[in-house]
Image 1 (tube, rainbow, N blue to C red):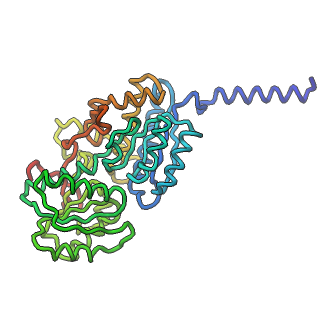
Image 2: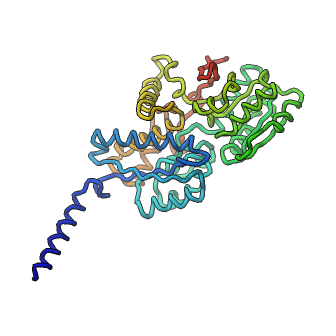
Image 3: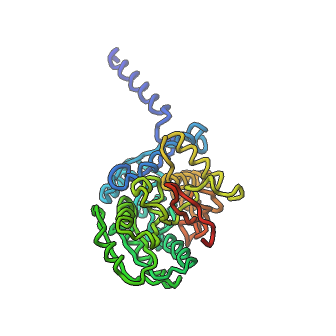
Length: 388
């Protein structure tokens, strides 16, 4: 053997040894995927989700990982584009070989990815809002945010308590808003609510005065419900005040449950009510509330690390990650099928969104008690007492 050949063999052996011993090598880590809308029109969802996942994966790894293995987080930004989300989902499965996925910031991107994960038999824990993500139940699909149907029910519950039964609805036309509008229409009769008139707006509309003027001129309207998320509801809220409609109560969905909505809507947000997770009012919860410690700790960790106000959207990512981590511990495995089974068995998990109890027929595991009714007062969230 020539000296050069011997040297090549030695270098090759050394390189192989380096690969096998490297801590980031796939066999030494647990690959978890995440596809989020970090940029684009839904960045108010994806950005806090991204920061939350990175922050807590670092904390988990610093504490020794899961079962002695570090988590390797593979994140892609779909920019709110459903086609990109599906492409990245295929990449996570075929190239990255993830064992599970926590992500899908919106209903639209989640729905595009579901067939990929179902076919691959890899668990997907969505952060999207619409009930259609988990109804009908799909074997490998779960989610953490409260559903649009629950939002309708919580809003109607509060309206009924106030003897406000004749409402107008204004809704966005994208996935979540369309789904919530359909759910509200479906459950309204259960609460004695009559939807007298309806209007819609597109995702790029910058003024909803025309739609709101029609609502204002409709006789008998006692309250208005906006099914929407993103910048649309802030525009609706500002136009609502400009038209002098504030004597008629305005309700928003949990899709606006971040401080950015209050900032965008400005003083016009005063008095707006919405259903939201306990996370936004953690410091106002009684010490006996089982969620208080979790939400207060998460809020402090998030705000100290990011220097930004907490939102419920990052909390959804926190819940998804730790539901998955707890499932890994119980399964003592990273086999996707075993993880799926253990996620479905989640019981008594105290998260930022509520106390989660999943089952083969419920891949969310939250009931209406997980929602709190909030009112915006003085530019901040105020927790309403039951019955008010």
